[in-house]
Length: 347
Image (tube, rainbow, N blue to C red; front, top):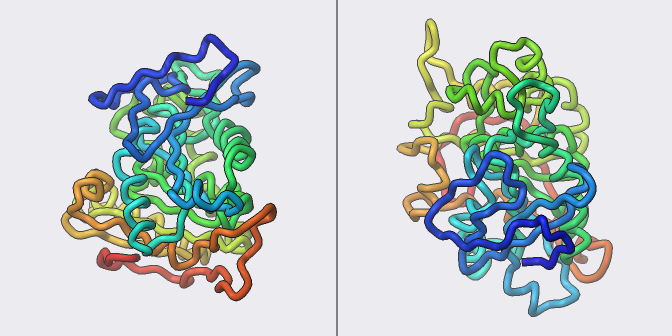
């Protein structure tokens, strides 16, 4: 745990049994990740002077062996009611295994503490019932600069990727599309690319956007969800060449749910929106998997699709600036159109 000159920061409590984190816990009280992960805190001036937030960190073995080398970073955004430990439970393990097998270039993994129900947006704090705060600003303005200043990263968009599950997928897509100059990769695993009315747990809406029966809550939700940035920022997204993937299980309600007069396919509809605006992406349907896709990966019943990073990930490099190594292949954008496809190892 990093030393912090603020006695208000909660002490480290290792708790490998429970995932529960209070709705307003910026420094996760449950910091156990795995034997591969570390937990750290960092200043969060976006929340006010003297405040801190936390994250879980994985450093590849090469980080200590090659002290001049710089490494790309995968930022993982946990799901609703989750916390930074989620990355330690599966992603850090998968990344470490794939690196050691030579199937993935060495990379750093950072899992932000994004509040259990924060949606990775700046909350509408003036509204009744809102418990969340500026999660977006803490990640974009505080966490990313802290990581680049503290660790040897490839500190440019080609060296940053975002991946998220469920509400973290919502956050991944909206942050990557709002700030395409910050991240070259957006991976949504069972991302909650939903309409305002579709969230079954109404308190999850209230915590960040305000009362569900307040039209201003719905208006704010619609102004910050991923769809908004596709519709209003697609030129910048395409110009930056953000590499995008959508992955959903065919037993997930985000793949198909019964609507008023027909079955609704939430993820497919979002894929169609991307296609309408000519935003490059892949849309993959995983047979026999429900919403808990990360649990299936963690259990070993589903392989982690690492080629998303490995095919186009910039090579780690030496020295400041992190320029592409001589002779290394340039980054390539994915295909312009996407159709539902069966899940394949390496996709």
